[in-house]
Length: 435
Image 1 (cartoon, rainbow, N blue to C red):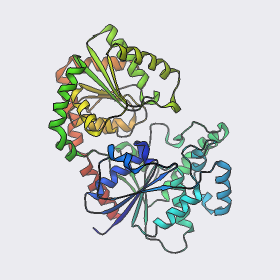
Image 2: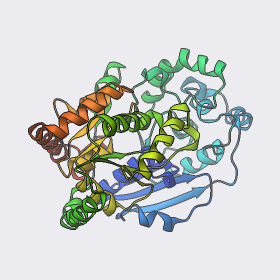
Image 3: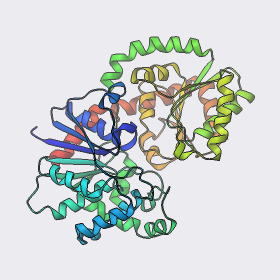
């Protein structure tokens, strides 16, 4: 198919969230013979070589853009005045949300708009993650200010976390009064912003239903996925490494946590639950953690959890892996009995898909996005922050082989049928063709 597709993200170097999703989309579509370019907007100089250790190569272009300066809120307001006022009709105050008094994550809007004006003239499809970032605002500015006819269709991938959708706003470093204004205008702004795209794609059945309820018909389910061909290629080697890991951990049962060490992901609750399991249920269990701390999100719960973590690590009950390769990650998954990630901020947890590839049972949080993915029985779901429910879920899965097998097999079937890169690529091409 003779299509040129550009995926735009920011801060791919963080190797998480929306940027990685765009990378995976690019990988999936490139494998189907379509010319793709991934444009990554970074706010600091990085080394392209650093990605080679983490991300597999794909058949597309990878372009890094470092803008010469980053602006604070006052600078962005000046850009508003220079660009004109027409875009206020479809602006969502999103640029305020991303442009706090901190420089973090911000770049000059006029640089971004200039870049996008070039892209819309040279690509058939432009696909971006999130709607509440300066990128979607800039795309809408481009739409109404580009004088000559542009060729690109603009597609937004809405990533919705289980807050009320009209309040889906990062609240850290934002003036309280501005936050109240957002709460009042957010829903209407969201609808107007999304309607300015030629199509909306979503990761979960729940998000699809939600966007439909907002009165937007041009929404398509694409899902998210992992590369099953890669898993198949490394599976036997991963299982061999898993046996060696299991011997080194010296535990009867191994629980895996795979995610950032932050409260929103449920890490403090996992640490507390595991500590109580060691003390009251069995001392012959181990917790393996793949993830890093985040200084930006450290709170009292995390501080307490890190104290317990150090004690467990000293007693060889907990094993920490802050960074692993893709192969090492799969080997650790294969060596574990179950995955626990009781996070309140998930759409399709990639960690679940990776665990399902080895038919491992998973424990997650009762949130509508994840619920629509795992229903009816591809995971055990608990209330966010409920330590007792985490403990009971772990005990039930480790004590009941039939239940563990049932949950693991159900997840594996979901992966094979829906949540894999081949299926995602097929759905994306269908969307692009229709648009």
